[in-house]
Image 1 (cartoon, helix red, strand yellow):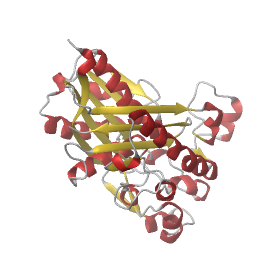
Image 2 (tube, rainbow, N blue to C red; image 1 turned 180 degrees about the vertical axis):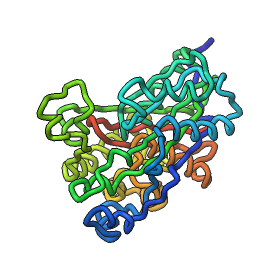
Image 3 (cartoon, rainbow, N blue to C red; image 1 turned 45 degrees about the vertical axis):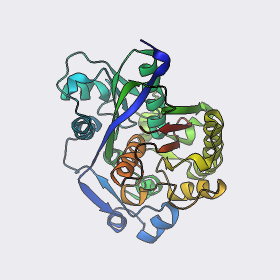
Length: 335
């Protein structure tokens, strides 16, 4: 087999959003906030959470998104060679949600790989899947990004800056190897991490590095240095976009659509302005869902395909930055 000509085809996508619609004004029952305050700072109008009395984990939402993607691809679960599962909100501390999803799909020993790149999970997952396919180690891969943030969010004033941002949902993609000489599939990929800034966006517990002080202080809350994350994203995302474009031998004019991670509408608008990207080329849906972390980009991609903004021959630039810090850019040409 000529592995040099093996390319990764995005066969299908699917999404599943948690059922409980929570609008900005609804949050005022728990904390001092308002629709205007949230919209001005984030662009978010609403988000969806799992029911408070539900026993729902990331693998459950991932299962529903996977069923849709599998049906659209014409695959049965048995066709899957590998599952890649991205999440920062796993069903349990361990084992990984990928193994739970594998069992829920009715599979026996299909391998499952959990990745912890949070907001950059789709970029790392797509690159990993491409490498598996090009090397011949797998031919059909299911990527799932799923998050159930809401049970861990602090619904009180002290958690306001984080709680208003996040939503629950899942996106799935069926990725398949094909042999072709055409310049399609993943054209370029650039990934970065910088653990120096890990504490800018983190949840200290549960963890192996637990201390008595951690337990006493109850450090189970997500922490975000919003100002620093914003400044870093506005600087790093254009840089990595240009890295990916240079690596691919393309210009921004060659890109049909940009699908960035949906962390904050103001970040995406700043990136758009700094790169002189015309309106309509940058896809945003954060106003509907909030930040769904690992699910954010695959859900946006599924919507863009549904809206026929991504079609055969489309060249797509995916961008994202999140906890780690991790960030990256992937250019993909659909076929």
